[in-house]
Amino acid sequence: MREAAFVKQNKDKWLEFESILKNKTDIDPDQLSDLYIEVTDHLSYAKTFYTNSNTERYLNQLASKAHQHIYKTKKEPKNRLISFFTTEFPSMFYQHQRELLITFLVFAFFAFVGAYSTAGDGDFVRAFGLSDGYVNMTLENIEKGDPMAVYKEQGEFNMFLGITINNIKVALFAFGYGILFGVGSLYFMMRNAIMLGSFQYFFYQQGLLWESARTIWIHGTIEISVIIVAGCAGLVMGNSLLFTGTYPRLQAFKKGVINGLKILMSTIPFFIIAGFLEGFVTRHTEMPDWLAIFIISGSLTLILYYYVFYPIQLHKKKMKALMPEELIDLNNQQSTNYE
Image (cartoon, rainbow, N blue to C red; front, side):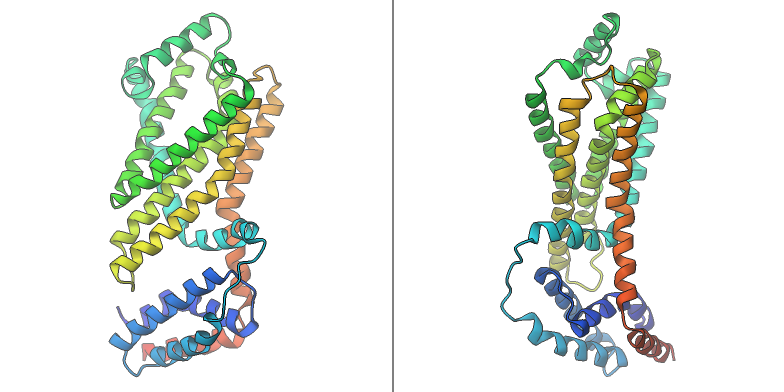
């Protein structure tokens, strides 16, 4: 890699680290250690390929400043769990917006494939989407005049608990399959998306598209969204095996596993919310349309804000916090590298 390209690719991380040290910003110790390890890896890379360059001197100075600060005794903050969800995870997840987009597009495409296939072959929903038992039960419920009766069969709490545990298991599979270089997670997304698409089109064929959508997506908006996020976690882990950057492969994989687990952990509160909605709210099929739309819209807004817009906001705040002279110094350094 050319030195100028190397600087351009990594300078935001270096500036962030330098700003944290200079301003004595209070951040999570593990996040600080991760930044330090990354900078020292970049320093080793620069020493190997850009000996006696401005980049090597800059990184050496930055690593030296950080060394003493990093290896002070670390104390876990009392509000570690809160800081994880409000700062640590969203800041880290900004780096993985591309994987999230890829996972979403794969899911959306195969949901369409499931719907299209069901439209062309009435038996597709039984063969590749839903089981015969579930389809037959749903048809019986439609004949009885209560198509969504499946959500009323269990008690509220038992359904909430069972659905939540099952969804977390599904998320673990979506993540675990990522060990197959990310392809496993994408396959898992494909399979579940085809099932969803065929399931939704099945209700359309019965003339119940709106009734099914307004009911299912009360809990499904969050449930499906965080399953996609769990697939993203698997893709992050798989990508770390293929695209190591400046890291040795084993270290890149460890970093990918850690980041993937953090993404997976972020989904747990949302699975609990989805389980609560499915157990206690979805069963009330008599609720007015406006209330169902309000819940669905609120759920979608929450997911988009937390996983898309909030990480971008945090990143912009970090960039604004960088000292102007630091930006000028590094830009001058980059110009020198081009020469």
